[in-house]
Image 1 (cartoon, rainbow, N blue to C red):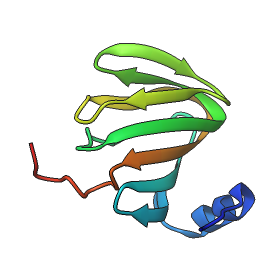
Image 2 (cartoon, helix red, strand yellow):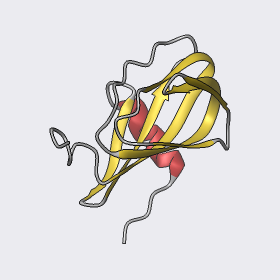
Image 3 (cartoon, rainbow, N blue to C red):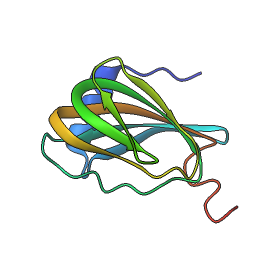
Image 4 (cartoon, rainbow, N blue to C red):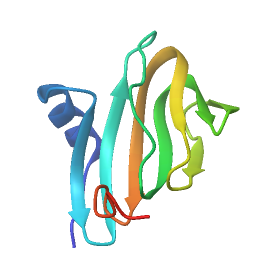
Length: 111
């Protein structure tokens, strides 16, 4: 068993470089904290794993396969593997818990 406190994860992410910090990795799942400042550009590309976003703070629009989804604290969005997606129109600093299944990168290169 592993437990995490969001406040500690936020403090750790603030000490790291870049917007992404993975904090759990097992074969079937990985989890991380993703933060984007208001007005910034989300550089991510489609992933080979299914993904779930849980918005902790902020406001933005998440585009998935060309469909726009406004997100705010409490929003939960499932994104299927390989679906083009990115956050845009980030109007308030965005803090998102991200869940990958299986673990991110474990299927890279598979079809």
